[in-house]
Length: 167
Image (cartoon, rainbow, N blue to C red; front, side, top):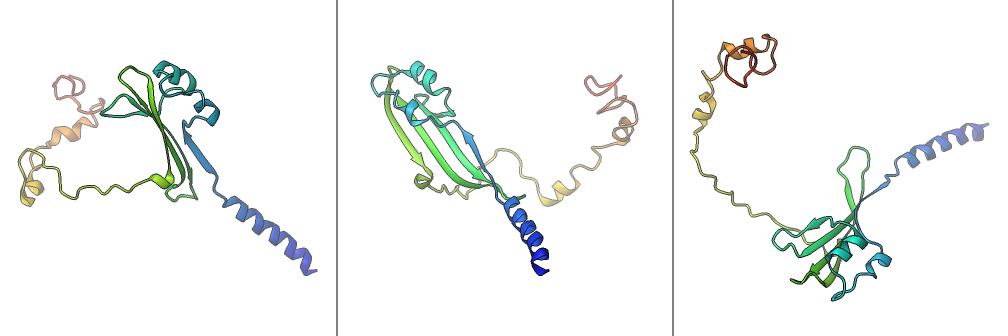
């Protein structure tokens, strides 16, 4: 008698645990080894690489002769932040003549943490005090802004200003 009650409970528990299994979410463009074997340094040019591998995921910001093909797999459990499970980066360097010079592969083990500089970037302009920030907006918003919401036009009402609602 207890086995008959235990079996549905065990099946329900197994089903619930199976539902918690987070699927892998692959993203990006990583060429297969077969595709990559067709790219030869000193022989293949940019047009050939584009034809075989497709468009790169990214091009280096300061050196447009370096193309990146990036792929990553993440796992998301419920509402938590996705966990990076695997990442591969293929970098292809081209010479000035447009021919492939080097092909480099990097993976998750090659990753290096980057620590941002804690110093603030200076921004030109006036620094406001606490009190100036607190009372700085008094008088800037009049009763016309509130009536603009009921004036029938979005964002301004009947102020007569070009681009600010209906005249």
